[in-house]
Image 1 (cartoon, rainbow, N blue to C red):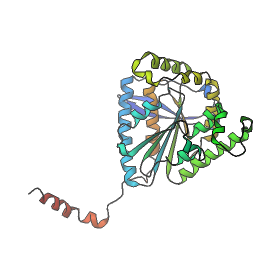
Image 2 (cartoon, rainbow, N blue to C red):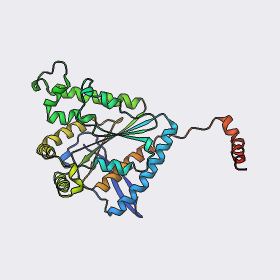
Image 3 (cartoon, helix red, strand yellow):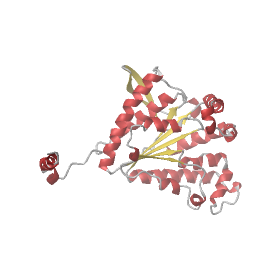
Image 4 (cartoon, rainbow, N blue to C red):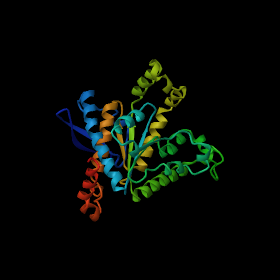
Length: 306
């Protein structure tokens, strides 16, 4: 079954019990909530996020100094789920050099000359940094499963027509993705995977805002409406991917996304609480000789003012 763990977060002097949704066992996506507010106002949620993201930013400084781990944050969700704004708000207090965002679009000609994981592998975080995948390697078992004709563009051996893409093909991809994540996790990459669970009605409202508000017109594409017609297929593909690839080394979390402020608090909280458990991530000690001479170095600098 789909289980969840509970913990308490503090928002504007209130004790609010938040739920972190981790996929364990079999998930039925149709039964999961798309809205959460913890009984808090928008202002209270923003205040909670401000504290959490400050702590995350401080953690990243220590992560960089330690230099043995990288952090990969994967964000998936339907169009308008709030991925861009979540990235902007959650990582606002990071050193800009400590986080790199990769937005994966349609593969380029060069990318298609490699296997489908290549462009994701070269975008993995350096030790000491966060990488955020805005859409991820999971597009290769999501959009391509809804539109299997896209696979033909990969020019794969023994795949000459859509009929060659059977269930065994997708099972192999799930296996490859699990092995890819296990490999990078074993080599020092901490992985978080968040599915922003948006309701169909909320997506409709957000698409309408893109049309009605001039400053948001640039975000709208008629293609969004065509993909919306395939909502059911996408939900089924997401559910299958979440169930087949949520592992201890790379867990999936299903985040209610209809309320953007609460979604950001949940995502930031999950990351902070998990990262705090890495007790070996700490700033390195100075060399004994340097430490013993710190006062001398200080005196040398102080003399420059006289």
